[in-house]
Amino acid sequence: MNPDNLPDELYTATGVRELDRIAIEDLGIPAISLMRRAGQACVEVLSNRWPAAKHIWIMCGSGNNAGDGYIIAGKLAERHLRVSVRTLGDIAKASPAAMMAYEYCLQSGVVPKIFDPLEVIDADVIVDALLGTGLSGEVRPNYQHCIRLLNDTSLPILAVDIPSGLCADTGNCLGAAIEAVVTVTFIGLKRGLFTLNGPDCAGEVVYDPLGLGDEVLQQVVTGTKKLRLQQLLDGLPIRRRNSHKNAFGHVLIVGGDRGMGGAVLMSAEAALRAGAGLVTVATHPAHQAAMLSRCPELMVRGIEASSELDPLAARATVIVLGPGLGQSEWSKMVFGHLIDHLSVSVVDADGLNLLAKQPLRRDTWVLTPHPGEASRLLADGTNIDADRFEAARRIQGQYGGVVVLKGVGSLVADPSSLDLCPYGNPGMATAGMGDVLSGVIAALLAQGMPLKEASSLAVAVHAAAGDKVAEDGERGLLATDTIAWIRRLLNPAPPRRG
Image (cartoon, rainbow, N blue to C red; front, side, top):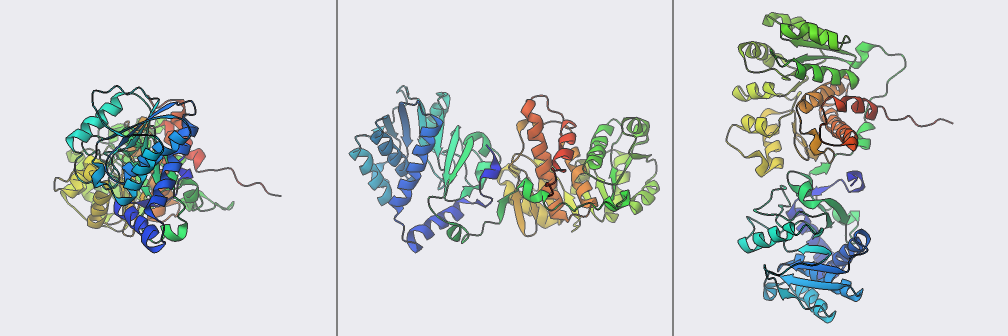
């Protein structure tokens, strides 16, 4: 799935319901018409994805999601496919539109039956039309049992609008959630499809606006968008031929306590490959010789006294504080000396853990926590994964600057926006990835990009580089494998002249 083929705006369930209301009440589109369009969109995906399928099993609940399922059943029956519809919900509680869809299903010769957990599902494809975006709280036990049975069949599942049991707003699994091969989602992209458990549950996401144009979709402001790499690359400053190294900034990377020199080295190499003109590393004296041997382009200083940091910081355009920093007495000395004097900076890893112990606010820094570090920054026992969007906003509000909350669907938050990265893969769940990212952010800042733009581009290009490396397999992917691809992606082929 290429996420760039999907729209940029990401909606909450409330936002999508408002779009639905606008279509029905303001534009006068009957709810059953939208339901028919949704059903037709799913039928087309089913036919294209599984052209040889002869028997389709459709699971319906009691809401409008079930109405979509009934429409799908009727349309498939009209194509002379074998269709089995099973229900968990009470049809008497259905909306008028869903009741009309149920009647259409009956008229097409398909008679829904109550789901029997002991029944053998011998179909080619399952359609999940159990629960939609209106789900609040944990899935009821009988639905959880059904969802687990469907997942255990190992049959391919198409989810209607959203996998049942997945929270549309947060990507949380609400007790149990369908694990679909493809999800056909309607009107607006639900942000929960792209973070936390969303990608695992949704599979490939296919979008259909159900005939609603941009003039309708733009009536609901989301505040959350997907990052788009090519668009972000357009913001890279053009390099003049008459340039020198000082024109592209001087990055100082501070960290690497004894035994953790690799983290600061990876960050430094990434900064060089992402285009910084100069990179200096301030690290534990034990690592100085090894770093120069590995990467002679670096300037490396072994720090024994805090005063040795002053001339290095004075020359730096951007400071990265934290990779491999640790929390020893040496670490605290370095952190304590620099933290009150950071201007444009990136704070990562143990820099964040130490910051959590003495919170400060700066408008000129980028903080790059993973969920554990994010929880420590908030210091109130918050489960970050309960709502990653809210957590990112809270950290940004408390600490200022730009916050990059790492994870599946990494989030980039500043005071006015919250964007989600749709790139990346499980192979990137390995040591050193965050160190590489912090170096890339610093390099782009050093080259003159604003805080939010530099952070967004770094997050997107880092994740996209991981996807390129993963073309050879996710397992065994190393953080340093991404660095060469980061350089390549930051240097797209120039347009031909003449």
